[in-house]
Image 1 (cartoon, rainbow, N blue to C red):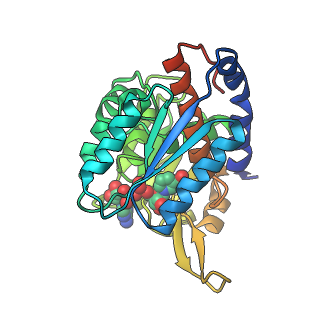
Image 2: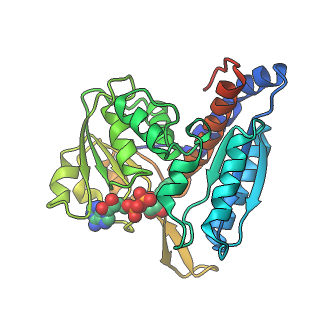
Length: 297
Ligand code: NAD
């Protein structure tokens, strides 16, 4: 029987598991605080930010909302980041991507205080992760580690294929699987748009993490019997539904489910974990900043 890895359930466990840390912080008189910065009118970005706020509210994290006119000069965004960096009551800063074309995204990533960089995208935090002593693990790959653990998937010695080499998913995922650690020790192959014969690579894998953003590009034919499939993709495809579209992953779920030993669905797999791990990172940031030892799930 194929195990369907329930991201909603594991994410709920993470949120519940944060309660002890929240209590320890409350005892010390501290409330974790996440500041989100939105410089966009894109409805998807607005939705992501409002979901992050309601997630924070659910576990008792204070969420502050900063909005900057997308037409404003980049300096306005930089000044907001500087102000939040200097504010000791703010523990985590999240600048919602993508940013308008006239803003230098790299400068933004460098500008956020690495101690408040709960996305884990600051070059210092990327370097720490690669070097094997991460401060914040980026939320999506961190959440995937939790999903693998929840399904008792052994990574040690496993052949893992990560499809996608983005800075937010593919690269940190590959690095985490490679780490000399309980949740790592895999032999990792990173595939991308220029990879030749992708099917040969995925067919040889015990664990496939699909993060290419190409609807249903990996089907059962490309998988080995009993492998673990983590589908990161969230793709809108036209469909005969009320909204006129539906969400599908990068994996062709029905055929992949026939082959896999364990698989994440879309929606309800990786997505909820990404959201939960932002809360996790924010609570960690608060513990570090306030000098409170917190027990994280
Ligand atoms: P991205 O566009 O930055 O990177 C995609 C990567 O896939 C690139 O490295 C590219 O080389 C590779 N790729 C593209 N086409 C390919 C192909 N045909 N064969 C092999 N590799 C190919 O995307 P991203 O930000 O890493 O996101 C990937 C997907 O995951 C998207 O669908 C995105 O919406 C989704 N996503 C989901 C979550 C979540 O929480 N579930 C979080 C982040 C991203």
